[in-house]
Structure formats: structure tokens, C-alpha cells
Length: 243
Image 1: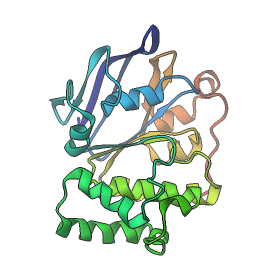
Image 2: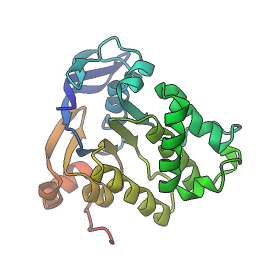
Image 3: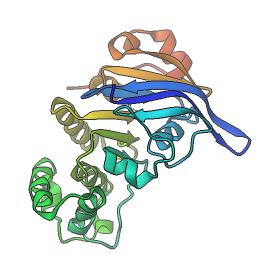
Image 4: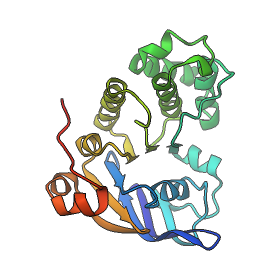
């Protein structure tokens, strides 16, 4: 198993965000992390990438315990976290933002140039805007830039926190098509997303957080059919997305 989170507990002072949660993500697997707002999804993602500490429990990546490993070394080990929000460096150019992705991962310039071509093929709109400042891009283009920058870090596990937030449906579909392509290429993805229909289309398994614990887990095909689950933990029906 590539990622193993065991009995994680996360506290912010006296507030318990996660009381006891265990999840796994295998090689080449897309797993959705679901739940209502405030369920602890983002806190768990930040604990995996070592942005916030665990009060108890463990995170293992490719068999290695990440306790005490600083976030930048977690990234170099192969876990790249794309947090909620755009996260671009607004006054740098698109090209400079992309270059930061390879620098952070310690990738040589010759290899980085090859990777850049591959990423620009996936995001042709960014090729047209390489010289523009990142702050001048639309919201959808900024999200593409953040994803492209993460891909340039050659992650083995990509953690995506609400990648569709605030984007037009057409842009969301384009980005999720890219996720499906990454999954076919064998990249592991942990997806936190409010768009349940698209989450269930891309992911093969899901964990549902409620009140700081994993309330339900299973194959997305099975969870999709469980109306009681949808009402109790996810806040409504999951409809089939338009292809």
C-alpha cells in the first residue's frame, strides 16, 4: 500500500478535528475523501503532507513512517498537496511559477524541460500564457497552473483539495478529464471534492468522514447506490454526471 494513515488524531488546541481515522491509497489508485463541510477532510490531508502534526496515530508512505519529516521533504518523497484555493505566486510569470515546481522537487533542468513540454501538452492554455503574470489569469487558468506545477514535481501521490471550487462547469470537466488521464497513467490521487458526481466518476474507492471519524468506506459503485449514506453523510443525492 502506497499510503497508510492509521488511527490519526488531529487537534487544534482543545478542538478535535479528527478523533480516529484510518485510510489507505494504493499504487495507481484514485480515492475520494468525502464528507460535509467541517468533517475534517482538509485537516487529514494537511496531516498527511505534514503541514499539521498528528496528536496520535501514524502516516506511512511507501512503508516509511513520516513522523518528524518536514513538509518539504515529504514533497520530495513524492507527496504533493494542492490545497484549497489557487495558491499561485501572482507577481511571477506562469513560466516562473511552473519552474518552482521542479526546483522544489530537486529535478535537474534538463529533465525539467522535458517535463514542462509534457505538462504544457496537457494544459495548452498555459503555453499561450507563459510570459503573463499568474495573477492576470482567470480562476480556471490559475487552477490549471497549480495542477501543472504539482505535476512537474513528479508526485507519486497527488492530494487535491476541492480542485473544482469556484470554477465554471466546463473548466471543471476539463480538469477532471486530466485527473482521469493521470489515473490511467498510474498516478495515485487522494481527492477531496464537493462535486460528488465527478468524484464518484473518477475514484474507485471512497472514505466518508463524519464527526472526526471514518463513518463509511467502500467502493464508489456501492456507495453511489446507498441513498441512506447520501442523505446522512453527504447531504443529498449523487447524480450521474454527463459524459
